[in-house]
Image 1 (tube, one colour):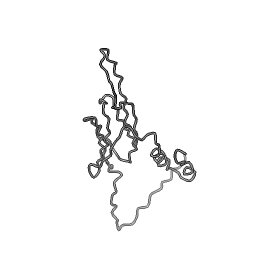
Image 2 (tube, rainbow, N blue to C red):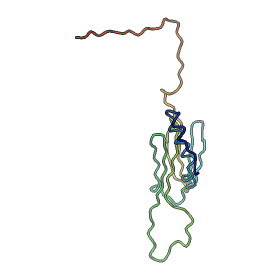
Image 3 (tube, helix red, strand yellow):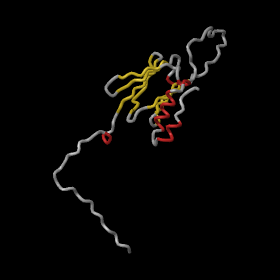
Image 4 (tube, one colour):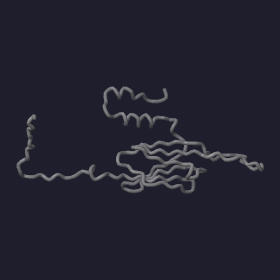
Length: 155
């Protein structure tokens, strides 16, 4: 048995399919390992994802946000074999292709990314729009307004 079967949850819940997909992705061992990463809280509403991507240039890494998913992919370009006899005797720095997916909570916004000394830093902030923030409703002492229903006459 490789993982958990969440299909019984689908029979008795409505609208929680995203949660079960998150649990399923978290238990997927194939996505773990490379490249290593850190997630740190840098402020009250700010976070930084740091990935170790030694050997990759900025043109070989893509950072994409779609809906609530942050996708970081890396694909190393092939190096031409050196014709003068110089080449690697040992290649210990892994430059293999990778794809990392991160689920973002609602109202999370990726504000930037930079590559510094083999470390990819992705800045993420939590920005709640004004319409979603709690607002105080004043309680009045006047009579409630009844909605007016107008009848339209058939022609």
